[in-house]
Image (cartoon, rainbow, N blue to C red; front, side):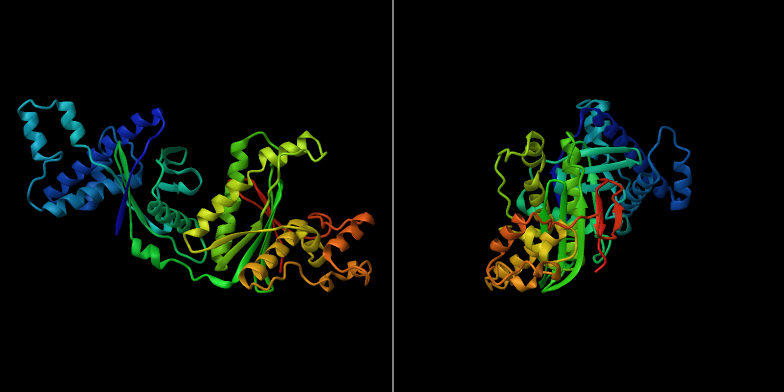
Length: 420
């Protein structure tokens, strides 16, 4: 077992509420201990707690306080416990500390046990990867944010992995973690050996290709040349709400990391985009969408945090003609087709070291073969021919394909699934 101790801070309005919770929790711990000392059983004590005044803790906090009182009794047996320590009690008797100071010394930490079936812990949600904070879910409509300092690298690796494992519903079971919290620090306890054992066996033959666009993200999962799964995400990027855009990007990153682990992929290949702050003659609105609102670096960094702790690797790939080639070779939507070419290119060049940056020209679909004359010797030449003929090569999401559409309850990001 390992316990990570971290200082935290919260908004000023949350502090009195946290103090109130700690006071009530401590009252229930002491009351439970005294009843166990008197010989009562758990069921009787639970019924007596319901009769206490000024206790409005939720049922799980009460259960955790009861178990903590029982643990104190079992550790000490028939030796009567003085909460806050004998030393502080005698200091109060001698008038060295005030009654209020003694009450503060007697406060117990909030102790919340973990549950594997509840994403590791029923009352806490790790939001460290995205926002470096932990959310205390006191009630359905009452969440308290506990913001963390900059984490050491060894803590990051452990906590990122713990968060990832408890976000995944398929493939890997979650890992229980317990929380202790007082007014200064939060303590996260979990079995680090079990955490290491949950590391998936990633396959060198499986990889994800990602095509990044301001409004759309296409991904494809392949094993060698076999397509295993695809996704086409559609974002509402045309908004001035930067936090909403960031949230949607992070939700997509989380979804991709789940697919990464579901298929035991080893590599992710993503476009190496270097879009400079130029208008390109397409207007201020386009310029704003590309350069100011598209936070692709945040997306890649977030995704890297999620897969790196499992041994996954992200590589940036030159995207030259990837959209054109993808649409000429595959029959999905434009972003997915481009992602397939980016994935193929990365796997061939970086992993297999075959130097097959471009696929064979003969791999184009039948509808394009009539334009592929003997005089065309490269994809660049073929692109120029198609462009001069003003032929549309990008495949629409809505026009040609029947797709399955779902929507995330949290982020409201549409994503489309193609049957393989």
